[in-house]
Amino acid sequence: QAQATFSVSSNPNEVTHYGVTEVMGRVRLEMTGGTSQGSTITITYLGINITNTAATGITVTATGVLAGNVTLSQVVPTSGTGGQVILSITAGATFSGSANADTITVDGVRADVSAKSLSTDIQASLSSAPSTANTFTNVSVVRVATVNESLVILVSGVIDAICLTPSNPRLTITEGSAGVFVQYVTAASGSAPPPDARAKYGANNNIRVNIVLSPLPTGTTLTWPSPVAGTVPASGRLELISQSASGDSALYEFVTVNQGISDANVESFVIIPAVAIAPATAVPGSSTAQAQLYPPNPTGATSIPRFNHPLINVPADVLVTINKCTTNLLFPFLTNAVGVGFDSGMAIVNTSQDPYGTVPQTGTATLYFYGTAAPAAPVTTPSIAAGAHYAASLSTVAPGFQGYVIAICQFQYGHGFAFITGKYNSGSVYDVAEGYLALVIPDTAFNNGVRGADPIGHVGNGSGENLGN
Image 1: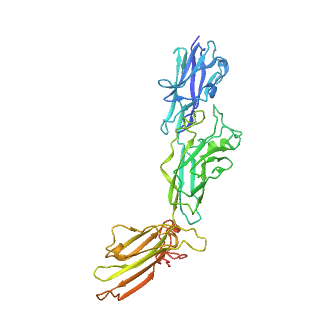
Image 2: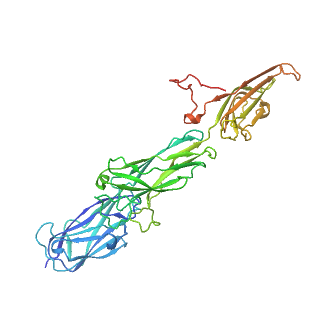
Image 3: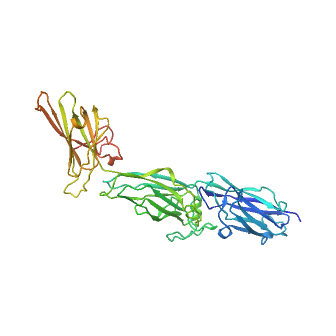
């Protein structure tokens, strides 16, 4: 009896970067001649570990004369060269003579590709024991998978001022390649698998996306929406499983009504969390956002699929920045020029205490000097409480200075007054005295952090500021 001969082929899968339990493509052996011998055929998945068994998804199917003569003998999770599936073949099955009639197919092998680089091809090699029992007539090494990108994260952050109605950021989650997102089982929300769901091969959960933020500034919270529709009509969506109390983390689960459509398209989801700011307690600061496929390994060690997916992007993108609403005061001219005999007094008052129900605010003012003999660094005042003021003479805070000063107050409703005195003659009598109100530069928080050059409603540039007192 001649040894059995087999033609070897595969149907490679696209597998996900960082996946710990990714499904390898089908390996198929077509008998083309001879008679089976009592033997084994070993399929070695080169350079990777197998993470499941026959009880959790690996299937071996034999047809034609091989039916009933092929069994899964052993799964070796890892060997010196890779995980192995060992098939046991009984003697006496003679080729039927019909093409594609006598076959062996191996499906559902899940393996850890998390250490493999993008675009890596996963190969499987075949060997026979005894070596003379089975011959592979075309190839003995086939490609069973290629590692593809997992996720693409795009963050469109916002800058919100404490005193304004906040705008909301956008976090766009896109699968790295078609077919990354899959629903195998009933979702946490109760959404059933689609009618065309993929074969599970041991799967017991769906693809999830974990969103992690750096701590949100005090007084700021996010509420994450659900569900989030995808960009492919009548297909996938993300459903919120949970979020933290402040909204600095959120966990989403992928569900779909048609896995075939989902697998044929790169799906994208635009998530817009709602920002809420408590003016009485809010403090300035920023928070960054990252995301990853979930659950992780090993904390989700019984979950299939699971991932060794890092948080991306690196560095993290800023999702939300919270700024104080400030008052920006311009003192157009102040002088304490040496030898001239002039001095200037300046006062800043915090008027956030009023009879209108305004939340009282407290903060410092930072004085920026521009002109002759300006101090080497800005001068910061002591904290100015609501209803209180700060006053100083230029000869005390910036001796010899002449020019203009911009004061940035860390509170709303700040106002300023300046008083210039001069002595043309010697003695203690002031010959010249003049006072004015400081101008208020429109709060840059209302203009994306930029000082506006045009009056409100003016079209064009260069017309000057629209300042008041």
